[in-house]
Amino acid sequence: MKPVGPIPAGYDAIGGELAISGHRASELVEQAGRTPLFVYSKSLVEQRIARLRSAMPDRIRLNYAIKANSYAPLLDFVADLVDGLDIASGGELEMVQAIGVSGERVSFAGPGKRDEELEAAISGGVTLNLESENEARRALAIGEKLGMTPRLAIRVNPDFELKGSGMKMGGGAKPFGVDADRVPTLIGEIMAAGCEFRGLHIFTGSQALNAEFVVETQANTLDLADRIASEAGTALPKLNMGGGFGIAYFHGDEPLDLELVGDSLGKRLENLSDMLIEAELFIELGRYIVGEAGVYLTRIVDRKESHGETYLVTDGGLHHQLAASGNFGTVVRRNYPLAIASRFDAEPEEVANVVGCLCTPLDRLADKAHLPRAEVGDLVAVFCAGAYGASASPSAFLGQGPAAEMLV
Image 1 (cartoon, rainbow, N blue to C red):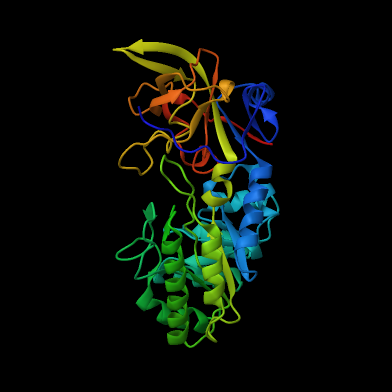
Image 2: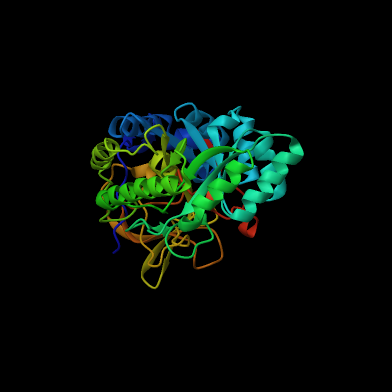
């Protein structure tokens, strides 16, 4: 038997069924007209952002990294609750423009930006987080061609990483950002060319649950930004400090101590140098804002036995939940939080494997999980599905197509 991950707070049972924002799972499926279905809770997103605002120093502003979940109704909802949006492609730029977000609130990171993406960003007044010296020169040339002053920040590849992070984005050779020791020179180049210098973007890693590691990284980030600004001889107008705040996916995971992070950051901000004292300070979060607010509902279409093991075969799978299947960067597969939504308040009574409908052994949603007995027609809920589910899974695999999505 393998334990499932912890079900996030905020979910209840109505009539024995899982309820999401006060709606029974079966009602939501009926409203959508089909399964599989992603359901995102407005109230849980609001609560998470309110807690962030309360825990972080007043000076800290909040950006939403839309790669976590770019479902248009959710994106529109979150955009009104945060201070800015971080994008990583021309397609994501079109998404934020479609909901009417001003370019002044948007920053654009990511290596390999095409010229047409740079042009669209400059035309839209978006801040470009430059990933290389060559990208800087291309952006300046495009700005000159357009007769516009580009807004340029520099993404820094720092000489440290976020310890304990699930995915390291800084330290050593990386495709992301400009190595820290070369940044002061590049600042001088782009300022001499007449751009609007918008500061630095320093992102070191993601999915960290250890508050002390996050605190250490934030302190290192502020120190590095101060050093770069001092060497460049210019105060920073803005510093995106990255994020990396993790959520509890697996058995044994302990939630991030957000209040410890906020308290420590507040103390550090009391001693900023002249190079940072006027800077706008941002943290950049995606998964931490929306991850626990999402549930993936999929229906059991078959129940079968094989060599003494029970298999619950669903109409969903890795084509919508690549991460939950264990195929999105994990080395050892562990079970996500999962429940039989139709019998949410029932006691476990059998050990079962929950699998998807694809003809590959990689399509697994839970291995040897202790669950209430489930039958054909019952709904399965995969939690922590609000981030990197629909936005990061191969929905076209085997012609299955995307899941339905809903904001409630």
